Length: 300
Image (cartoon, rainbow, N blue to C red; front, side):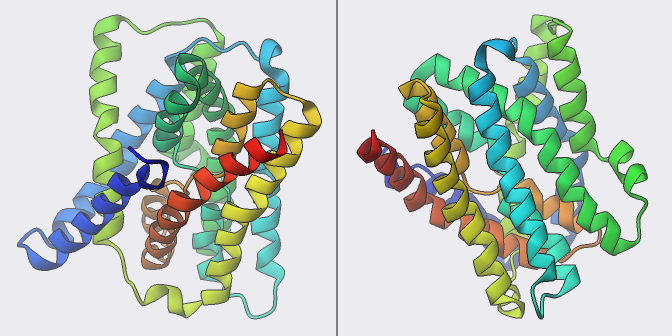
């Protein structure tokens, strides 16, 4: 598949969800249930399974891990800073801020296999293990604060945070799932991405981004310009091995997580606005990810 079409299947699933919700008997009521299924069962299974699949060796890959965490941390700081810009709507910012620093881990693992084979998947699994808990905690904070929810209460109840934190502990303790359970978990998790992307499409409101186009542009600029640029600077400065350089840059250029829509909807945010951001991020990444890798090749 050509690089520019790498994310085309994800975008087509979003379009399918939009069309099915609006032009078939499977209307909004069906998709409300699908969102809950994704949020409470399918995405937690995907995250936990991805994290425990490969043993982690943090000491051996500290520069790689540090680069990934630095990219995510920069995205969080920049996204939060937008809340203080003049005229920014608090609810829209609380809902959409997460799209600037969260990433689609499924796409990341698929891209890693294309870039660096089994080693690339292992490196990306490490980044997912370390960065997903940080991303989810940072995503919950503005939504909980805006909605008047107790932050600590939301953290201990959030299924995405529970799945990633427990997966990380499970892995670091050296535990392994029995093959039967691992296979079942993999099958459950594999349903998360297609259903999650279709739920994004079902919730899509094309006019929602017009409520705050400048905020949307700023969030997407962080996700697809600032973070890839930072990753390029980090991997060149740290002189990481070529394969790891490509993995970090690809990680920074990924589209935002499709579960951002589900999280915003479940916590009382503006789901339509986030769905629009997820859709645009997927489109931008179709060109932006291969361009980021081309920039890395030119800088070497």
